[in-house]
Figure (cartoon, rainbow, N blue to C red):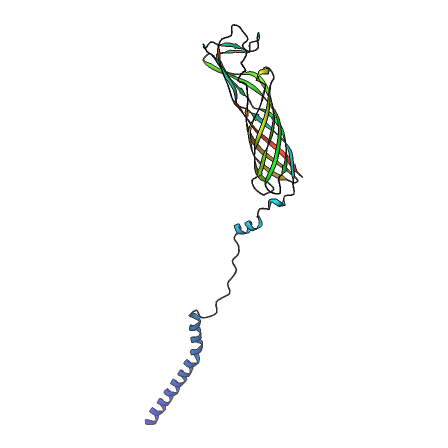
Length: 277
């Protein structure tokens, strides 16, 4: 009995030793795994960030330098509409309609009317010389336009728009033009002075010359070697027609009140084509 018990104890001891050896053999890998989970293993190499689409486009579309533009001269033609404001206002002091027109040829009867320049066709040319290698240009313009002078008249209790005269405008402008961006297609602005000769077809006393400030805003679209664009201009021309009096066709002539505009605001909207060299 004692021998059997001793053998059982020996067998149990051998099994315990074998189990202990197995646990010791498995312990190093487990310990290594636990050490790796603590974060002390070698960090992975950082992956370089890719640029965003906006950053990539900004890098590919950087504006060119103004000095890279080889053009020193720029010239072109433009076609569009020219318009003007009021020229004068006249009315009879007694409120009785008068026969307005050349002596013996009545055009219309009204107690008062305002003479206004209507829109008309305008053709223009421009030539510019670059100053240095920057954005500034010295620009000269020459434009010719024509338009009817309409009489906005009071006829009884209502009004009407009647033909009064036809005027021709010959305008010369000189000023500085600035390119607002360095792209080949670009907006621009010009500031200078303009001299204008106004010629009336029917009443010579309405013909006069004057000058004033002028501003131009436009945009040029590059098409091959040329440009196509749109520009808007405005000039305030001082006129001296204070001595003019609208003629009355019949006698006796009534007393009238006459008010002349001191400045004609001449505006234009044109399509322009140009080329640099």
